[in-house]
Each structure stands twice: as structure tokens, then as C-alpha cells.
Image (tube, rainbow over all chains, first blue to last red; front, top):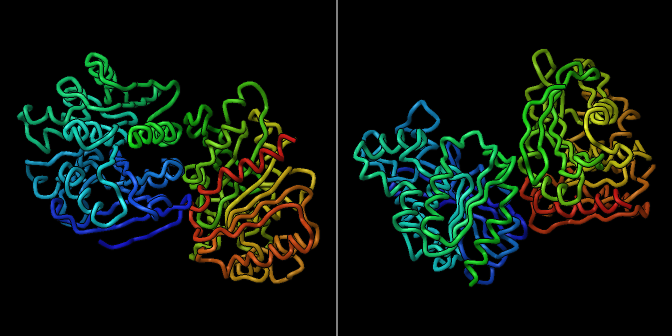
Length: 276
Length: 276
């Protein structure tokens, strides 16, 4: 693992690191904010999974998360959204290939050799983080935006004892029924829709749910509402009596201006779960 | 004036607008955050002047200012740092020409026809803002980063009845004695150093000072300390008995991670001056 940069931020350190990923077969870069509290012992870890087109960098610089994580004594990690580099498959569209890993382990060519974002986020990166930083890996929570909200919800529900809480900003909530989903799940996993269900937060909420609190924020003026299908997830949550809340925020869109406006709420929400 | 974009942010609106600038002879773009309070009447205005290479966009997305301005009921404007467009003079270096207007009115060619950032910030843009938005132009304060800290301090001191308070993050504090200054002041204003003094915050602090509180934050691990020369400004402030404070922040560098870490302090500082 190599240090790309470290900047002091809210008395902690905002670092960027790169490492050779075995599962992705390429170098991967991530951002990690460690609050000052990490100097005196392991701190809880919040995952932030980003959306389509993003790298590790977008949320790290635009989501205004560090201040609240510093206040709560929580680390936050910002992984990349796909494998990258020469020789990695890509597509001309912004929503497939690089920047669009969709948090699945691809089985179809040309994606299968590198596009393993599910295993990267769920297995390889946590192991690396636990070995290299002052993190209490027994206390983790997870959040994300759009495609990353989809990733956060599906990974959380598939690992029932790992995360104390899960939240999402404008998640792709029902990809098996959306053009943000059918295209990617078909390309990465093939047309056997039995393989898709694990990667649909609304279906998983209906089937298994989450053993802990869930917070979803969605902007009512989001340009992508038809693709995100928040109503499917809200229905599944409430039909299940899932502990948690789903908020439709009047006037907000899909941008980081929306995310940063509610970041304090999300970090506070996770802190309450992590510290009890 | 045309609206480029408007995003809801912390219950207010983060807008981006473009207009034909007479003094710069080109279209100019700026960001303006209006808090929700502006719906019920004019609100005070905080200016944020950006540093070398920046457009209106950097601080608008990375400085985490909106939340504190929303809390205090203050608008914040993010102007560009130079004229732009085809036919506008430029230089290969990052620190001259586009993105490097240095908040002066150029008198030398090829800059003199467009590089009028002093007049743009001090005269044209305030007039436009006052006509078009719910702003109380009798209550203004000003801040900025690096080259923008230089602009904020020099413009504030040259307009003694306009700003209730002035602050800066890592300002270019003594440009007449620095390679961040001698090059630009020479290029834009010529070699008559009598024309330079107005654009040196340390010299102006010594000569005229500021009739209100001054807050300066400087990172102790800033890579550019030799160019910024904070010691000159600190000396001038304290020699003058200028109301205010100068903080050297251990471990912080020149980045937006530094700025965002102390933005709450700056907005709160200005709010106290604006509301008394």
C-alpha cells in the first residue's frame, strides 16, 4: 500500500492510498479520513460508496463528511467505483465499465476478469483497512449515493452481522426494474435474472431486511427519480416494518449539494448505532 | 444575467449565473448561495475570493461554506478569479493570466483590456448582485483564500465603510516581497512599484488598517509559506494594534481540507460583525 497524499482535516487526517488489488487485478485507490481520536485507539468505520462516474475523490472533497466524522470520532472510507487502468474493459457509456462497477462480481466477458467490486468492498478492502489503520472493524456502518446507495444497501443486507446501521442518499433502489440496473446487471451478470435479485435493494428488503436501523434520503426534485424508483424501496421497508425512516426532501436534486445538506444527519444516525 | 444552474442546498439555493461584464469585456460566471432567510427579505452578503487556478466552482463545492451561511442567514458569493474566453490574453504559467487575475486593474499590455478584477469585485459585481438578489448591500463582509485572501484584505482596506469584517485563509500576505506578487504586479501594473503598494495587504495594514475585526488562519504545514509571508502581515497587524487575530494552525496545509476545517469559525466571525 502506498500513500498518495495526506492532508490534515478537522484535526484528523484525510489520506489517499493506493494498493494492488488481487480481486480486481489492478491498482485501486481509496480515500480514508481518520479522526484525531484514532491516535488514541481504534475508531469505528463508516463506508461511503459513490455513484456513477465517481472516483474515490468526489465525495472526499464535496460531501462535507469529515467534520461530522471528526466530531463523532468515526473514520470514513471513500473507495473507487470500479477497477481502472490500461487493459481494463470499458464502455463508451458513462453508466457501464469504468466508474460504473455497480458493486457486483461480474461473471460475463469482457468484465469478469476485473469487475469484482462486490468482493472488493465486502472482503478485500476491509481486510486491508483492518491491517493498516487504527480501525475497530467490529464497529462498521455503511452509506452511499445513487449507485453507491444501491451498493451500501445490498452489501449491508448480505452481511447481516457486519454493519450496525445502513443509510443511503438517493439510492438506485430497484435496479431489476430500471434502466439503471437492467443494462448493468445484464452486462455484468448475464441474463439469468436469478442472479440479479441479490443486487436489488427493494427485493432484498422484502426478502431479508436489515437487522438495525435504516435511513434513506431522497430529493423530491431529483432528475433521476424514474430511474431510482424510491417508491419500491419505501414500500418494501414499510411492508417489512423495517426499523428506520425514508425521507423525501422537498426541492433537493441528485447533486452533492443534496448530499452535503444531509450529511450531518447521516453521520449522527450512524454514530448512534455504532456507539450503542 | 442568465441562470446556469440552481441547486437546493441546506434549505437555500446554490445558484450559478453568467453575465456580460463591461469592465472585463467578456462573460463572467459566479456562484451565489442564498439562504432560506432570503425568501423573507434581504440578507447580508459574504464575499469569498478564490485563489490561483480556481474558477467560481472550487470553493462553491469544496469549502463547505453553505451550511454555516444557511445557519447564520447570510448569502455567500463565489466570483471567478479572472476574465475568460476566446481572445482573452493568457500565459503558459498557472500563476499569470487566466485563473490568476490577482484582484488588480491591469494597465499593461496584453492584460489591460480585460484584466480588471479589482473593479469587477469592488464595483461591477456588487452593483449587479444588489439589483438582482435579495441582498442587504449595507451589510457585507469579505474573505478569501491565498490569492483571494490577498484580494479580500486589500479590497477591504481600500473600501473602509463597506465591509463589517474581513478574514482570510492563507493569504498571499506580502506580494511586493514575494515571487507570488512581484511577477504578477510587474506584468499587470508595470515596474513602477508605487502602483504596487495598494495591492500588498501587509503594507496596507501598516498604512491604513481596517476599521473592524480581522481574522487570519494559516496552516503551519502549508507548502507555500515562503511565498505567502504570513509573518509580514502578522507583524503589521500587531504593530498597528489592529482588532483581530492571526492563527497559525498546526499541521494544516494549503488545501480545501484546511479551508473547510475552519470555515465555521470564519462564517461565525463574520456573522457576529454583520449582526451587530
